[in-house]
Length: 453
Image 1 (cartoon, rainbow, N blue to C red):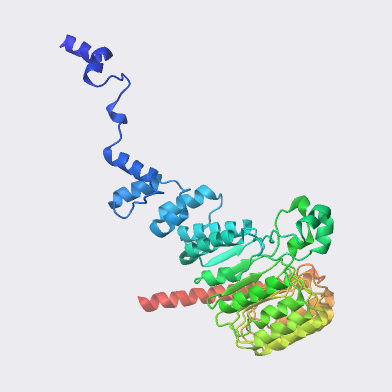
Image 2: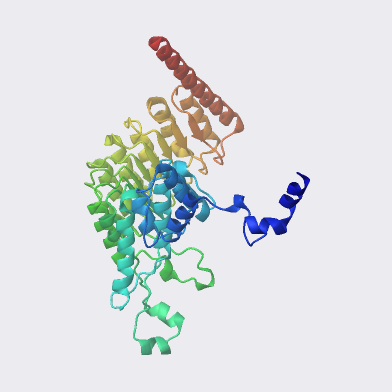
């Protein structure tokens, strides 16, 4: 027994029994199934095999399949969310899947398409590379179509043509070219709407991020061609529910042209044109949009140049509108003329819940109208008046109006020069209103529970 035991411990004797490699160990040998799966992974780009495998083998293959496998292969074939979750977390540091209906595959395709479009430099029509580069983009759009519902494009690069002939470009400096060739168009948005049949939300900025020392005004221009293309794209996109066009230097005339194409849009519910150069002309156009057949429920035109006349037009539209629930006019130039027009017509409005009039040069002369509106309007629950010059007399008028108000749940009066006493009393009324709403909701829940039981 002892000699047999010594022979088992002698590696020289073991070599004859097991293998010529003294380090060979049976436990390190992978099962044949795993070896086959590994081979399928290595050849997946040439011959993607997945559905033919058993479920447990599919799970194993997807757990080791590289996340850099072309999506032209994985997109139509793989539905398992665990694989797409791994792809997202490998590629991006922040991954909030709740913003994508908790669908990792949708998140990956939307963010991949956004990254591609933000880096794409559209070639000039006369360029020999135009056809090839656009074919790649169109192929990607067709591939992503089934999975994309929303696009948030934070920059669009202008085309790569500086203008002029090669000889001119050799002789002219960059600054001279910038002065003589100011207009550079961007990617035609019609490509997106034509190939994205499920697109419900489009957010786009005609600007360049992080341009650094290469800053030129031409990188921040919403050109007439861009405007025309966007108008046609929005008109043809019958599923589009949200349109956001901000930080794009959109002029008053361009905004009016765009709004004219939205007048009869069947499903558009949210429109944002913030941080542009809209004026009174755009205000009158928005009035037509709100007075028409539009079902718009959210409008954001903050940080523009809408003045008193534009405010008057929007105010008249609010008197008859029955769909809008949120209106943001922050950082405009309404003044007392436009502010009073909007607030007076809020007495007749029965649908608007939130109104933002912050930073609009509204003074204490508008406070009396505000007080009357707070007494008579029973729909508005949120009013933001911060950074206006309401003053102490205006604060007293607002307090009088709030004494009879039972529906206001938020009233922002920061930096309005009202007295602390008035502000404290108004905040107490707001607190009481919120408590009443909470108690009412609790009572309704209790009644519903008792009815079910």
